[in-house]
Image (cartoon, rainbow, N blue to C red; front, side):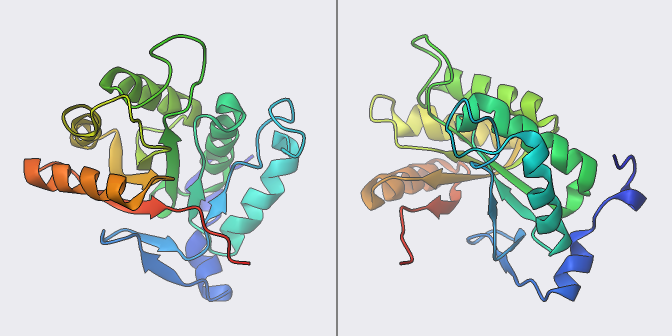
Length: 209
C-alpha cells in the first residue's frame, strides 16, 4: 500500500487527463469535481445485500481518484460506520488529503439509546468525534445533517452546535440533506441572524430519469 505522497494518486493528473470539470461547492470557495463518488455502496453486505465489501470497493475508489474525482460522500449510518472506515482507509492509503473533499453525515441512529440519534448538541458532537475516528482523519470537509430533526430546536441547538464544530476546526463546511425547502430556509435564516456558519450545500431527492 502507498506510504507517502509521492506514491499516492494526485487528482490533478486525472483532472488534466480526463478533463474532469471542477466547480465551487455552493457559495463556498472550495472546489469539487462535478462528479462525486457516493460511498453508500461500500461497506458490508450484512447491512444490505447490494453493498460491496472493502476488497471489492477499493478498485472503484482508486479509479475515481485516477479520473480526477476529488469528492467523496459517505454517512455514519451507511453500513453502521463500516462505510466511513473503508472510505478513510482507502483515501488515507491512496489520496493526498489536501486534494480531496470528504463529506459525511449525522442524524440517523447508530445504536440503541435515546441520545444515539437526531440533531441534539450531544449527538452531533459525539457523532462527529466517532466519524473522525472511523475515517482516521483530523477534520471533515463537509459535515451534513442527514435529515431535519423535528424534535430538536434547529436554531439554538442544531445550528449553534454545527457552528461550534466549524469553529473548533473539526469541520470545514456544513451542509444539509433531505428536507423541505422551508426547513432549509429556516435553518439558514437562523444561522445568518446569529452570525453562525451557514449551509453551503443541500442534497435533494432528485431522479434524473
